[in-house]
Image (cartoon, rainbow, N blue to C red; front, side, top):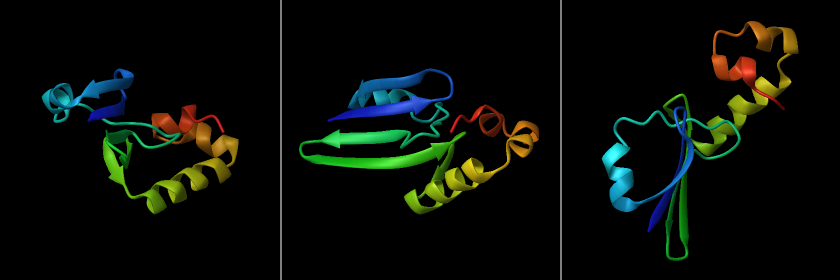
Length: 89
């Protein structure tokens, strides 16, 4: 089994199980263009969506991203969330 994670600090990383469990409590998972945490095991993939360390179900994640995509640029530029200001459709 291996784990692909995206963190605010390090970006994309592919880890084995033991390496993942060493950092999982301290990492701030973050990815706006897909799942931030994916476990790969023989023939199976499990995905979780995180933005700034907050977990979202797939439906809620897609809803939030759609809201940001539909937001006028002027509102995105003054949004208090850094990731929204930097979001590139």
